[in-house]
Image 1 (cartoon, rainbow, N blue to C red):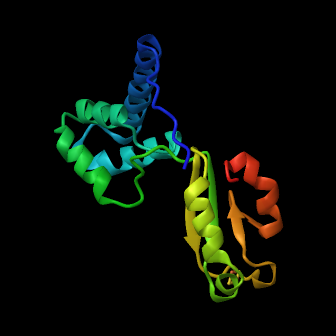
Image 2 (image 1 turned 45 degrees about the horizontal axis):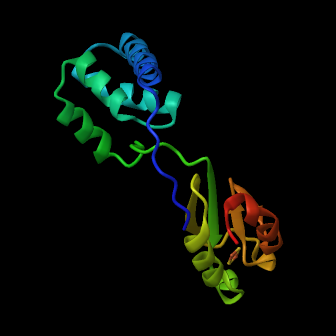
Length: 159
Ligand code: FES
């Protein structure tokens, strides 16, 4: 599997991002109310805007609602609908339903586990009703057959 080193943004850029997140949190608090009862609505609105709940966003909510950060993090991590990691740039799902499985989906999944490039998230799913194209892949929500995998492979980092 390919790994890239984590690169931190320059400090001035990180500061600008945190200011934007704080401003976004303040707009949500203004809309939903500066009270602890609005916590879930505010988290939901922030996730809708940003795609996930970043640590600076959770810290800004904690400050804005005068709640302990541990409580904000506890609520955010309790509900599965809240994402505490940034969404992947691309998702690829392998169907492991019976028809796809007997056509080599498991081997395909192993190949993807080993070689998928950063930015791609691998998932698995059950039958999507396209068994005749098996083994079926879903690439960013679109059904693709094995032939598409050969076209996709270079972009996804799969050799
Ligand atoms: S088993 Fe994979 S699409 Fe039906």
